Length: 253
Image 1 (spheres, helix red, strand yellow):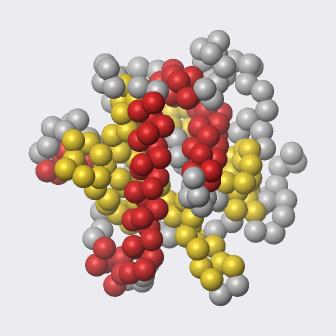
Image 2: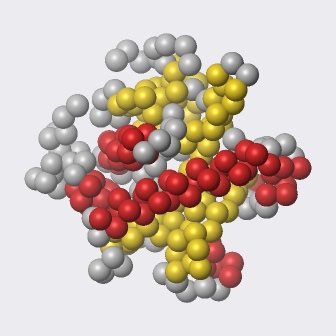
């Protein structure tokens, strides 16, 4: 499709104006970042994989009644999405200890949480996306109490879906983060899952070996990030079984 006007440039994705009112084109880049973009690299094929994987997860959520911004995939790197007002929060769901919660609380990585724990961080790169309690969110007007109830319910439904899908292919869903958007239909507001769901936004460990299949491979220099993402896509059936690396020209629209 012809390149349209860019309206937002992010670390891993760009947004362009869509072909119809109320739509956007989301473009997945090969950029990899960590530690609030202090560590950067270009991973060939990463954008292709994340586009296909996010399509897979968003489509699956839609099939079980979880509303998302996803409309359709356009090509190898782009998808058509519904324009929405992003709630300025990252919604984090933790099933097992890893990353920052292990450091904050001294919990060994891999320790099961007593139940899925939902946390919120305020979306502001200059502040390092700090964790914020629900009281702050409501007091500062980022979301209402009803919004928070709905956001938690959405996050737990996403967790149920992703946990089951991953378990079926031998992967443990350690944690993940999502973003939530608001769409308006007349005077009625609806909350939807937005942004992306991919190994960039999840921690995924092989159930048998504990091998990491997510962005921690890049954060911690554990190997080839494209190979890890390709393995997730292969297990889920998103790529043909003979594909060994994302950049190969065997992906078909």
